[in-house]
Image (cartoon, rainbow, N blue to C red; front, side, top):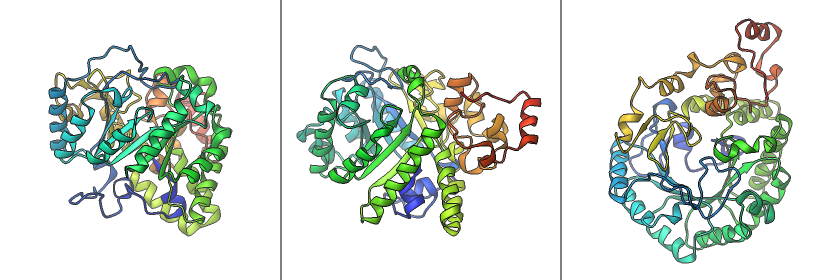
Length: 414
């Protein structure tokens, strides 16, 4: 995640301690790791395959009739015991739609009792006022609600008419109950024209947090290549996000704006600051390099358990299993230093290829999202095709380009 509000607007935001090594955790006793590489993973747990919507970009192809091998309640509690002992900072209950699982609140209560920070990732359409009050009572730290546009634009994403209105009702119910709630939005050609309207919506509704995700072609997202942003469109979207975030800050709003799944955004922000405020840019560079970008993300600072019990390096890496919680503890799976993909992700400087290998900003970006490279080139160490920085910006001159050609690493960007 790239926290635009923190890096561009100097806003103090929750999670700074874990994301940028800034002293002071969110809970008593939480210690800032010496390096981002030492962080235990935030675990995204797809606890069910069932879903009441039909989102066109669902990364794990969930749905109403999708079969799964999700754990029973006792099995799930055993997993939570292991995660608590292992010291993960947060468990994100996702799906499918987690609100369709009948024991969700029982599992949340159990997780909180074990000292875990519980988060819900939901489409929001099933959160009634009563359920919102229960979410608050159960001690849920945060609810992330997916919303990809205003009105019909969102409904087209979700595959169900009325999904926008139902999600907005869920948002308002959470806010009324005092639940910390934010929005999750995936950037595509279908909704980038909606960015200003979305920011107007944030301001009007008093939204506390919004995360803009870059598209990852996993699950049903594989069918959305034509809807992905071009590099020019990605830069334009970032310009709008930066400008509107600053405008919110200038009028005294503390809306926390982040981008997700493309660590290039941090470098783009840094390059903009170099022109606007070099002194501030230097401070941002320190934060970005402490974080390490993708090098401290997938397989390090984030992991996933899918609805079949399979463990993955992140929620988009469903095509590569690290292990199975039905057979082995998550902590044991995650601690296997000999597992090939985990070994590579945790030492990616030795593995990454192409323009990422020669990029002058690797310490801040870390080669961005390896799973996007794998899904595109069938090679997890290829360049991230979503990098929208030019060869000139990353310091790739003619000699270095020839070096890539000679070494067989001249990947054609799609």
